[in-house]
Image (cartoon, rainbow, N blue to C red; front, side, top):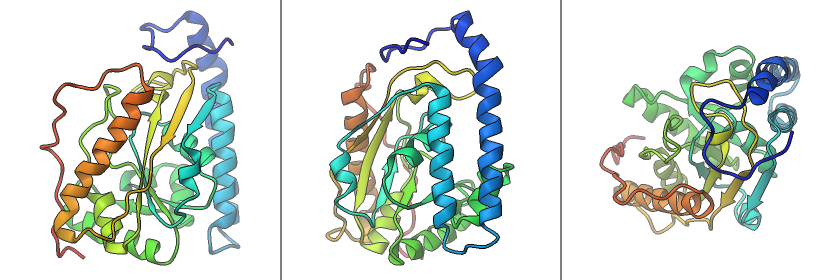
Length: 274
């Protein structure tokens, strides 16, 4: 199928895209997820460090990207090499964001994600057995506890990845950011690397199972050092991270940045939480 330039997703999709999605892409995607999820579960029976499971997740991600027919372009890839132990934070548009991230980051990492993903078959099994970090965004006390586990993971030398919005956007524009990434980075005294995914909202937006092949860009910004920040500056760092991710996003998107983006809904984490 001919790949298109990035632009608004047609509504409804062309008939050819709908047929291809229902007959080929969606069934193959779910079969691939079941296959690699089963491999990951089997690998977890004889390994404890998660390295093999991470390689399996990368293979699943590359297969998923291929199935969706979306070319992925990485802008600023050199910034992925500057700090291996860091919090990598990115906007969240689609279920395809996770395959894009796993297929693009050139090192092993763990993810911090919503706890309800652990309930899903295959994907949840991999998350549970490979050392990923669940966070309950609906329960502040549980969220604080899980962020403490994430800080320990960072201090052990393992990079973390997180979607600061806590869920997918429905509009294509970034939502308000939670304070979790800033909290973890300041506690662990590691940098935050801002990243933006552009194109997956048009490829596979929330509440749909039909692919619309478009180019996807992963834009990686300069790491933000946190050594000069204190826990009293969590919200300040969150605002800086949000501004940088939005800058990266709108630089590469056809969408225009809102005139007055609101940051009022950013959730605060108490200074002495952990």
